[in-house]
Length: 225
Image (cartoon, rainbow, N blue to C red):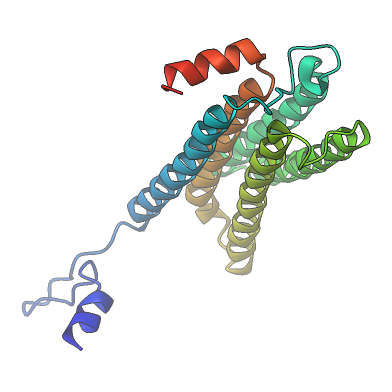
């Protein structure tokens, strides 16, 4: 049982010393930043592996890229540009909310957070509408490996956005429930970093999904496929 007891130990929560001096007080913000870096690293690895398998699968003869020819849906990426603008506005809203909280401007912070949530929800709705648009054109999930990867990559990205919304809602609820608006800035800074990271991931996916077959083949060759 000593192993389980050791795993439950919290060495950063040291009791007071014999002389009455307080023990070490943990830096909760540093711990939160470390946890966020770990989460972002894991998410980055997941998308990296998906992209590598995408490039590997692209070398099979049944793979047809979604851009590069007039009849391919992403030869005209206007819908994806619109979705990108929505996600960019969501990220800007998070920055506005973070800056407002840091300066003690609660109203500005609320406006920023509300804008971020609104544009994130609009982004998710626009992504779903894009799914319906592709299906109306006959690009179903199982009709082409490129289609399958599009639905997979956008679904995984959307799930991470939904997870961010859940965390953000929990942060805001706890701050308002505890009536401590001044404590909103540190967790908002972490949420903003998460939104910026997912925006960067989306830009990579956007560039990949709108690449021509020649570009995809060149990337695959660089990876040794």
